[in-house]
Length: 499
Figure 1: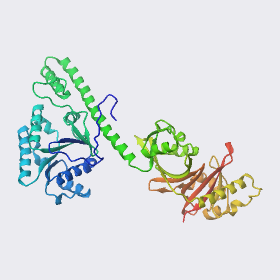
Figure 2: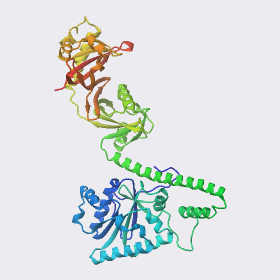
Figure 3: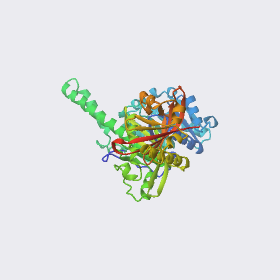
Figure 4: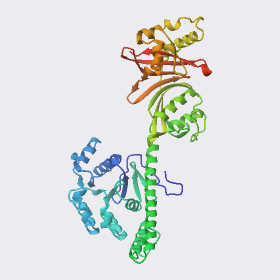
């Protein structure tokens, strides 16, 4: 987003991603980094031209055959519309253009459109930097604007920010009263209106002033070497200012795109930093805060402050993602203001360089069938009671379980297993400890590049691939339940085969 003291671009009332029809005397500009990012907008402009029965000449960097293919994939078949003509820059002879030749070609396009019975003409030009060198003066650009208005010619210019120089881009940006951002026709606060002869204002055009300074310094270069050195430093600083302004413009585009995308998602989406503080959220997230009776100013507030019913054990999952950078899906049960909610959380890491900087959380409510899960937790509770009191009323529960079971300590040492684990996996307690404990034979089972798990009040369900002693591998769901407290905490694991 632009800084607080910088100019702002105000978006008009045009619906998102569908540019309004441009009147015949209008001109606008599109600034982009990849043609694919604005291809839908270009297609809308071409459809608008077809619907208005205009003849449209599109002078493009992309080979026309490839551009036709891309537009056809997007639903616009130019073979069905002879009113649209694609011209490659190599054929446009931009390098030999002048004010006179450009005006002549504009008149020729309008004349040809009238001769073929079209209601008007439109020019979409993917601008090369050579054009600025051929028509450098403000007077020339004003004269060409007068020709465009005389011919009722609609002009849209595309500027590739990855190829053109910052000086040329910012000078071009200042010459358009309207720009198209993400398909939205917007007023351009960077626009500097040209003034007629006799009313010249030396401060009205930053770029013209810089050019005059540069020319004056170059004329005195031979006699004033020290002054020339200072002038070069000054130009470098000015170039940095120009690059920063173009970056500000790019960030404005990115912020508009991000806000539009997040608010279009029906699921709750928010972003947390390494301190688990929320930094961004969509409208669904804001509605959740309103329904819960909490303030909607969420920036900088902690996840567990905004979701008071979330189990604190979930911190471990966030810590793993910040450490290892793996996308993870978690099924959770939360007690919120509206009651108990079953939800699926997709946790997606965002990296800066090689370090995870933020995590995007996408929450989708689901309808869970807790019957099987509750049966397993009931079994686990009974076996935990046996582990705490081997001679008590739950004696023999582990060996009576039809699934492999193990009890391990906080440091990963296996304490006991049941008969079915020895029979199905082939390991004894001593053999498991010799291998390094449960983690030596269990690894996460992924869905694509993601790991899915479920958390229920400190208990965890993890999909795993378990290696047997005979070399085979079985897909299992591991129900992990901690019991005991303090330094002597232990956990019971039930390995439930997936059929």
